[in-house]
Length: 162
Image 1 (cartoon, rainbow, N blue to C red):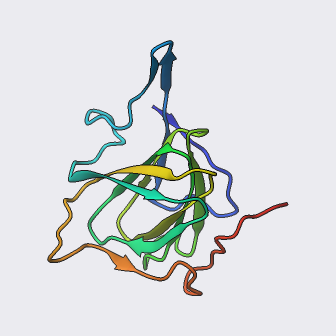
Image 2 (image 1 turned 90 degrees about the horizontal axis):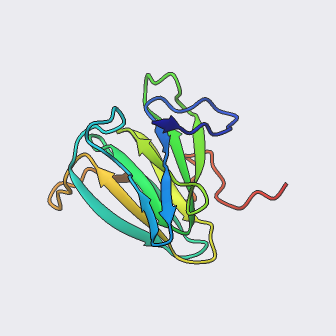
């Protein structure tokens, strides 16, 4: 398993893992193995869902108390951002961003308690497959939200041209 190393002014948030994926391509098309139950990266299965974002759209912020997310961007490009606000965490107040999608096939594993969100940074709709460790419970959702542009999280979603 190849691990992905992103550059960031902050340390990698404790519990976040990123796995670089191999793309097997030939004249017929492509195949990418996202998660396998016999690899250390995999925890357990709850459900799989697909979500999308249109160009320039930000979907943030939320965290889960029990659920672990495994994001894989199938189409387009996403900027996935994580913020650690867990009391007692050695990486508390750290922000990590990952650029995932067609040009960088990775899976980003986000542990419970870490705020996260994403922004579509491609010219086309981005499609995300999320394999989570807990099934969704509509009567008691394991999801706690803040607005995308809150001052409680030190992150600016705008593009950084430098």
